[in-house]
Length: 121
Picture 1 (spheres, rainbow, N blue to C red):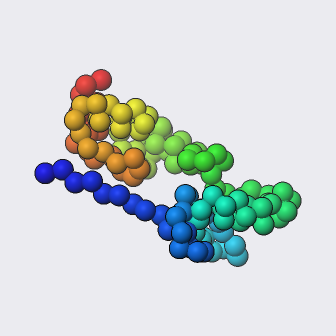
Picture 2: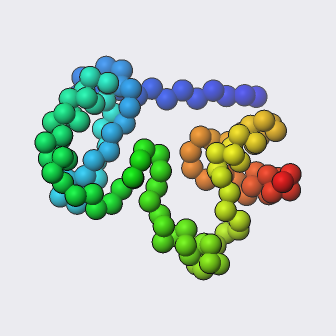
């Protein structure tokens, strides 16, 4: 039996339809908020004067990309956390879907799918 799960984002300000989840930090505390395009733009505009003068100390360099050079270096050198060959997860997910596997857009890819991918390549 197939199931379809639909996640609806609700704007945390006015309970309308949200289009994205924004994350930000202040005083060492990380926050997430679901907002409509209009509210997201207002939040970005409110932060703009301070962000323009601030230094980046951590976080994503570009949307969807993690800055994890130390972990990558350890894995490539066979150090702690080495769990096998480095793979392009986007390529693995695409291959899995094309070959009948169910795989999420984010998160960990199952060992079964990784093994099948490796065997096919």
